[in-house]
Length: 158
Image 1 (spheres, helix red, strand yellow):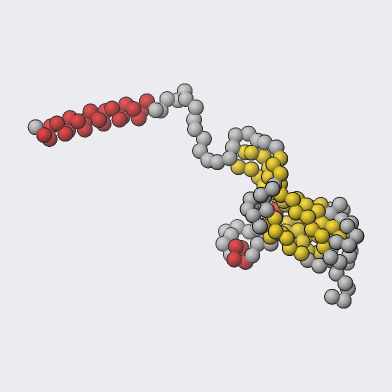
Image 2 (cartoon, rainbow, N blue to C red):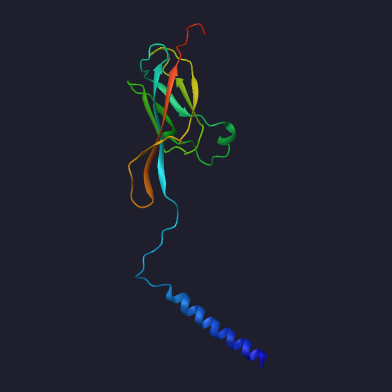
């Protein structure tokens, strides 16, 4: 008798649960989206001569990740993480990480064409980044951090 009661109760509970489960599959209701809102990240800035305050063209600016991080990357560093300053000294790196203290290195790669400059490294934070635009759905636009360099001229005999 006890076994019959347990089996009967199990059949009733299974029937109720299957009815409740299938009733949740109504195709007329909206579908939930899973994930989190996201934004693309970029770093923009300017490179100028420290003494004259004039823009410097032809300076390579790139994210300078330490070897301890580089060894864990499964793919090569994106080309968008490196840029060359234009005639106004401006640069922009896109598709970057959104984290604090990203090391950014500026190196004179054009030789004496625009003068010789010592390399410099600064650290960029997205804590005060500018939020540009919106987006559709989960895309929230672009976060742009600003990083400006003032490079020192290199004396020819250094």
